[in-house]
Image 1 (cartoon, rainbow, N blue to C red):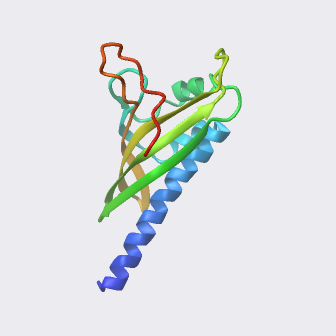
Image 2: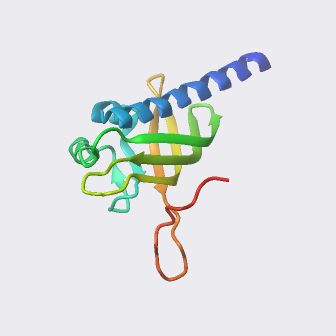
Length: 152
C-alpha cells in the first residue's frame, strides 16, 4: 500500500470516528436512546459516571430513564479530541462539556468531564468497545467533584 493510500485511509478512519462522536452528540441532544446506543458493541465495557464500576453494553431502558431526567436537550461540546488509529482498532480522548436543564434542579447544569473511547472495526463500521468518562474531584478531603474546571 502506498504512503498516499495509507494517509488517505487513516484520514478517512479518523473522519468516520469523528462522525460516530458527532452522531452521539446529536443523539443526546435529541434524547434518542436508539441512536445513542447504535455505535456501541453489544458487550462494550463502559465506565460511566453512574454506578456500578462497569456496565456491559448499553441498557436501553436505563439510558432512556436517565435521558428522561433532563428537561429539554442535553448539550455536549467535545473539545481537544485526539484520535489514534491502528488498523481495525482506534482510541480517542478529549474533554466534553455537558449542559442542560436537569429536572428538579433550579440552576442549569454545565460541567466539563474527560472522555476516552476505544473502537474496533466490526462489519465495516467503527463500534465503541470501551468508554471511560470521569470528572476530577478535589483531593482536599471534601471529595467534591471539580465541576468548576475548564480545559486549558
